[in-house]
Length: 315
Image (cartoon, rainbow, N blue to C red):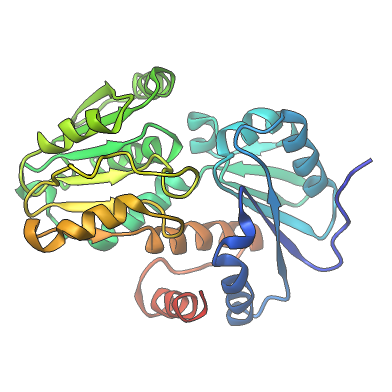
């Protein structure tokens, strides 16, 4: 017997860890009002790497309940997809390639899984990096963490490179465990890369510091580890020295973001552009909402500015 109560109105779910703390719980109703949709959002909290049965119970409920229309999945994207793959009638190309689901939606009676991060991470990256930056620079990209978001960003850049030279010439990925690096290598092995990519095992923050300090001026350093939100701390130490004239990106927008504080402390001295995960948050949610409710939502221009302003004034 399901532990979930059937929805009484159109409902989208948020499958996460501490969903009640997310700004989306306040922003979602305002967005629905803006879009003219009578719907609600409910959180489903799981511990990281929860039992497969728990994921299956939640997704089975969404699949069978008429007014439960879909979900955004964070933190559990890989575990949820692996546990529930047999429940999906359809999976998007990125979901199959990455083996993860960040979006669950319905097409008629069919339940679909999509991985939106290769789209949303790219939209967020383009929002703060100058157009044409990589084409005219020897700067590199260092991604701290080899999880789903990191992999998604590399896939975005591979696809972008098919039409543009505005991609880094070299990407370095570090991770605390060898397993994630091997998974990334395996997926990358099926692709043709237009740039150099290196993988380095770095179990400690001090080892990440070494790679940060080795970067050319103007390089981009990304915290994609989840530290600061899903776990305490930062992937680098207090002694880290970010690249001069560089860019620093924290994928998260909430939590005890030590990494963000470390970057801001050096912003003036190192002439850094420091970006948090707020725009990533906006793109991440609006892409899934568009999928779940089958509506068009702009990714730029006045309409996107309005959506962003609603969120900024509500969080």
